[in-house]
Length: 135
Image (cartoon, rainbow, N blue to C red; front, top):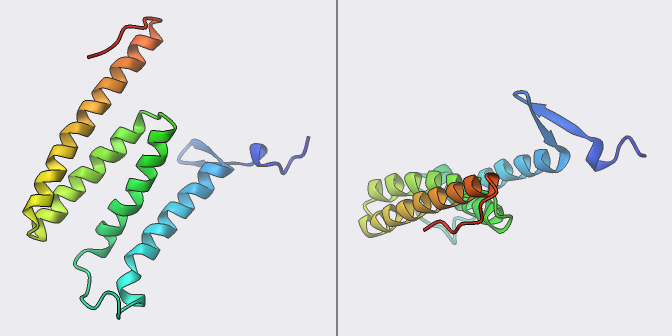
């Protein structure tokens, strides 16, 4: 058994152990937010107007990819990601005076809250050994 194998490398953040892959993913996530937030600076010909809220825009974009990844893994916390993204999106687009998109994010917020409720109910039933369908 190799001591330096990926499975044996653990990092602890705030008492919560992260595997090397989770730790690397977290670093890549924040690096992606930083990079996407800088697009308007590095490519002024493509993005001539300065960004209003580059970090919030980048956060919602990169977080959406993270939420989609968790969704493919059927992780319940994916819905928490969607709820956070939707709350930020509602405020962001309302402030930018793009009210139609803000209203769309309100609808997406309720869909994410309903999805979280459904998945938590399903998890609860599965923990009890009941295979009932939750409506």
